[in-house]
Length: 176
Image (tube, rainbow, N blue to C red):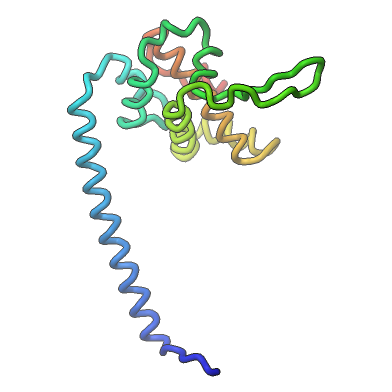
Protein backbone atom coordinates (compact mmCIF):
# COMPACT_ATOMS: atom_id res chain seq x y z
CA UNK A 1 0.00 0.00 0.00
CA UNK A 2 1.45 3.31 -1.05
CA UNK A 3 1.15 6.38 1.19
CA UNK A 4 0.34 9.75 -0.27
CA UNK A 5 2.98 12.45 0.26
CA UNK A 6 2.21 16.13 0.22
CA UNK A 7 4.30 18.59 -1.76
CA UNK A 8 6.95 20.38 0.32
CA UNK A 9 5.40 23.82 -0.26
CA UNK A 10 2.05 22.59 1.05
CA UNK A 11 3.66 21.04 4.15
CA UNK A 12 5.55 24.26 4.87
CA UNK A 13 2.36 26.30 4.44
CA UNK A 14 0.49 23.94 6.77
CA UNK A 15 3.27 24.18 9.41
CA UNK A 16 3.30 27.96 9.09
CA UNK A 17 -0.47 28.03 9.61
CA UNK A 18 -0.07 25.75 12.68
CA UNK A 19 2.54 28.10 14.11
CA UNK A 20 0.24 31.11 13.61
CA UNK A 21 -2.59 29.25 15.34
CA UNK A 22 -0.32 28.33 18.24
CA UNK A 23 0.83 31.93 18.60
CA UNK A 24 -2.78 33.10 18.66
CA UNK A 25 -3.60 30.58 21.40
CA UNK A 26 -0.56 31.67 23.41
CA UNK A 27 -1.53 35.35 23.08
CA UNK A 28 -5.08 34.59 24.23
CA UNK A 29 -3.84 32.54 27.19
CA UNK A 30 -1.41 35.31 28.19
CA UNK A 31 -4.30 37.80 28.25
CA UNK A 32 -6.39 35.45 30.41
CA UNK A 33 -3.45 34.82 32.77
CA UNK A 34 -2.94 38.57 33.09
CA UNK A 35 -6.60 39.03 34.01
CA UNK A 36 -6.41 36.24 36.60
CA UNK A 37 -3.25 37.71 38.15
CA UNK A 38 -4.87 41.13 38.38
CA UNK A 39 -7.99 39.67 40.06
CA UNK A 40 -5.86 37.72 42.54
CA UNK A 41 -3.77 40.74 43.47
CA UNK A 42 -6.80 43.02 43.91
CA UNK A 43 -8.53 40.47 46.15
CA UNK A 44 -5.58 39.92 48.48
CA UNK A 45 -4.59 42.16 51.35
CA UNK A 46 -0.86 42.45 50.76
CA UNK A 47 1.35 42.68 53.83
CA UNK A 48 4.82 44.24 53.99
CA UNK A 49 6.17 40.67 53.69
CA UNK A 50 5.03 40.69 50.06
CA UNK A 51 7.51 43.40 49.00
CA UNK A 52 10.36 41.64 50.82
CA UNK A 53 9.54 38.34 49.11
CA UNK A 54 9.71 40.08 45.73
CA UNK A 55 13.37 40.86 46.42
CA UNK A 56 14.24 37.12 46.24
CA UNK A 57 15.35 35.97 42.77
CA UNK A 58 12.79 33.78 41.03
CA UNK A 59 9.87 35.00 43.12
CA UNK A 60 7.42 37.22 41.24
CA UNK A 61 4.03 38.65 42.12
CA UNK A 62 2.04 35.41 42.05
CA UNK A 63 4.64 33.28 43.83
CA UNK A 64 5.14 35.97 46.48
CA UNK A 65 1.38 36.03 47.06
CA UNK A 66 1.22 32.23 47.38
CA UNK A 67 4.20 32.10 49.74
CA UNK A 68 2.85 34.98 51.86
CA UNK A 69 -0.63 33.49 52.16
CA UNK A 70 0.44 29.87 52.68
CA UNK A 71 3.12 30.73 55.24
CA UNK A 72 0.91 32.91 57.39
CA UNK A 73 2.69 34.15 60.51
CA UNK A 74 6.32 33.02 60.20
CA UNK A 75 6.76 33.27 63.97
CA UNK A 76 4.84 30.01 64.37
CA UNK A 77 7.97 28.20 63.15
CA UNK A 78 10.59 27.84 65.87
CA UNK A 79 13.51 27.45 63.48
CA UNK A 80 14.29 27.67 59.78
CA UNK A 81 14.36 23.86 59.55
CA UNK A 82 10.77 23.65 60.73
CA UNK A 83 9.73 26.04 57.96
CA UNK A 84 11.72 24.16 55.31
CA UNK A 85 10.11 20.92 56.47
CA UNK A 86 6.63 22.48 56.36
CA UNK A 87 7.40 23.68 52.83
CA UNK A 88 8.33 20.06 51.89
CA UNK A 89 11.82 21.12 50.89
CA UNK A 90 13.60 18.45 52.95
CA UNK A 91 13.52 14.66 52.81
CA UNK A 92 11.31 12.84 55.23
CA UNK A 93 13.44 9.84 56.06
CA UNK A 94 13.34 7.68 59.17
CA UNK A 95 16.66 6.06 60.04
CA UNK A 96 17.34 3.74 62.94
CA UNK A 97 20.77 2.25 63.64
CA UNK A 98 21.97 3.54 60.28
CA UNK A 99 19.22 1.70 58.39
CA UNK A 100 16.37 3.23 56.46
CA UNK A 101 13.06 2.44 58.15
CA UNK A 102 10.60 4.00 55.75
CA UNK A 103 9.40 7.12 54.02
CA UNK A 104 7.27 8.38 56.88
CA UNK A 105 5.37 11.66 56.61
CA UNK A 106 6.11 12.32 52.94
CA UNK A 107 2.77 14.09 52.53
CA UNK A 108 3.08 16.27 55.63
CA UNK A 109 3.56 19.96 55.00
CA UNK A 110 2.15 22.36 52.49
CA UNK A 111 1.92 21.20 48.87
CA UNK A 112 1.37 24.76 47.62
CA UNK A 113 4.60 25.97 49.21
CA UNK A 114 6.68 23.21 47.66
CA UNK A 115 5.16 24.04 44.28
CA UNK A 116 5.92 27.74 44.76
CA UNK A 117 9.53 27.16 45.81
CA UNK A 118 10.23 24.71 42.97
CA UNK A 119 8.78 27.22 40.49
CA UNK A 120 10.88 29.97 42.08
CA UNK A 121 13.97 27.74 41.78
CA UNK A 122 13.30 27.22 38.08
CA UNK A 123 12.95 30.97 37.51
CA UNK A 124 15.92 31.83 39.73
CA UNK A 125 18.29 29.57 37.86
CA UNK A 126 17.26 31.24 34.60
CA UNK A 127 17.47 34.85 35.71
CA UNK A 128 19.99 34.96 38.57
CA UNK A 129 23.66 34.26 37.92
CA UNK A 130 24.33 33.34 41.57
CA UNK A 131 21.42 30.88 41.64
CA UNK A 132 22.51 29.41 38.31
CA UNK A 133 26.04 28.84 39.63
CA UNK A 134 24.65 27.12 42.74
CA UNK A 135 22.36 24.96 40.57
CA UNK A 136 25.18 23.98 38.20
CA UNK A 137 27.43 23.04 41.14
CA UNK A 138 24.72 20.77 42.58
CA UNK A 139 23.83 19.35 39.17
CA UNK A 140 27.46 18.35 38.56
CA UNK A 141 27.32 16.14 41.68
CA UNK A 142 23.82 14.66 41.26
CA UNK A 143 21.13 15.35 38.67
CA UNK A 144 18.91 18.25 37.66
CA UNK A 145 15.89 17.22 39.78
CA UNK A 146 17.95 17.02 42.98
CA UNK A 147 19.71 20.29 42.11
CA UNK A 148 16.37 22.05 41.55
CA UNK A 149 15.07 20.77 44.88
CA UNK A 150 18.29 21.93 46.61
CA UNK A 151 17.84 25.40 45.11
CA UNK A 152 14.17 25.38 46.20
CA UNK A 153 15.32 24.48 49.73
CA UNK A 154 17.81 27.36 49.70
CA UNK A 155 15.07 29.77 48.54
CA UNK A 156 12.71 28.47 51.26
CA UNK A 157 15.37 29.10 53.91
CA UNK A 158 16.00 32.57 52.46
CA UNK A 159 12.27 33.31 52.50
CA UNK A 160 12.08 32.33 56.17
CA UNK A 161 14.94 34.66 57.08
CA UNK A 162 13.52 37.50 54.96
CA UNK A 163 10.11 37.13 56.62
CA UNK A 164 11.49 36.66 60.13
CA UNK A 165 14.04 39.49 60.07
CA UNK A 166 11.90 41.87 58.03
CA UNK A 167 14.85 42.74 55.79
CA UNK A 168 15.21 42.41 52.01
CA UNK A 169 17.03 39.48 50.42
CA UNK A 170 20.83 39.53 50.39
CA UNK A 171 22.35 37.55 47.50
CA UNK A 172 25.80 37.40 49.09
CA UNK A 173 24.50 35.80 52.29
CA UNK A 174 22.43 33.24 50.41
CA UNK A 175 24.78 32.10 47.67
CA UNK A 176 28.21 32.84 49.18
